Length: 126
Image 1 (cartoon, rainbow, N blue to C red):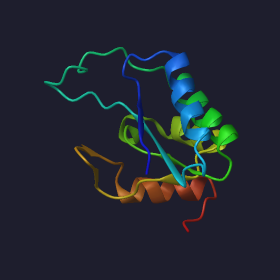
Image 2: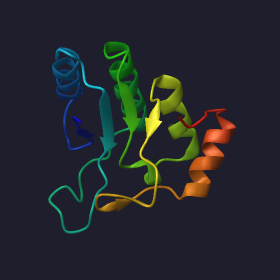
Image 3: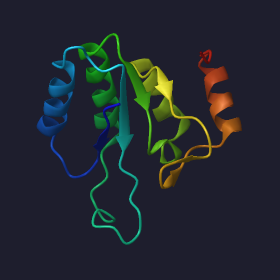
């Protein structure tokens, strides 16, 4: 599984370069988690400039367009996103989430919140 963390003071060109590298793999990855940096106190990126939500949604859209057969997974940073931003990520092409209490060092939205969002968007778990 290939992972990408965005929001680490990278440029749009940097994000595009990562997506191009992934899209040019043969075969393309089955799963492409897109993580939004969660600023953890005491780490070097604690005070990093936050990635604008529109840039994050665009990143999801470009991943979907360039890797149509891959699962584009909305991953770390979802707890810091409002419901509308998460919904836009699904409309832009995300088709999977990491579900449950915790993703590595940071928490996910609670299960009830995820179930509510999926119901509002009429999305069915596989």
